[in-house]
Amino acid sequence: MAYQNKPFYVNETPGTKYYCTCGESENKPYCDGSHDRKDTGKSPVEVTLERPRRLTICDCGLTKTSPICDGAHKNC
Image (tube, rainbow, N blue to C red; front, side, top):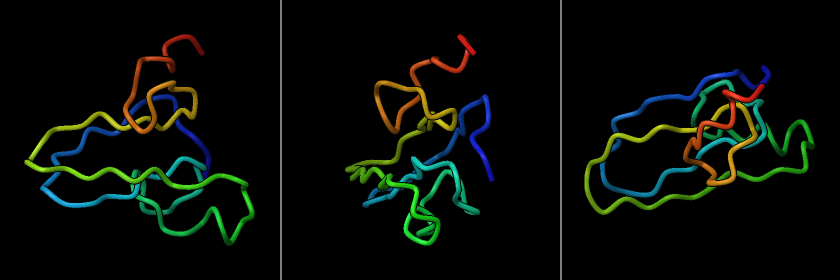
């Protein structure tokens, strides 16, 4: 599975989440350990939320504010 040129919109609950940065997870936007199995050299980003939030999670791999989308995919 590769990166896609659009973000994921997720309604998150409080707690710790691990978001994929390698583009290989079969459970995007969440990490499923593919970075280790496929030796991508990348690691997931850990985010802890104190309250429910709607997040825009990057899946183009170009954001400078990982894991949050910064619109970089629009320049592709």
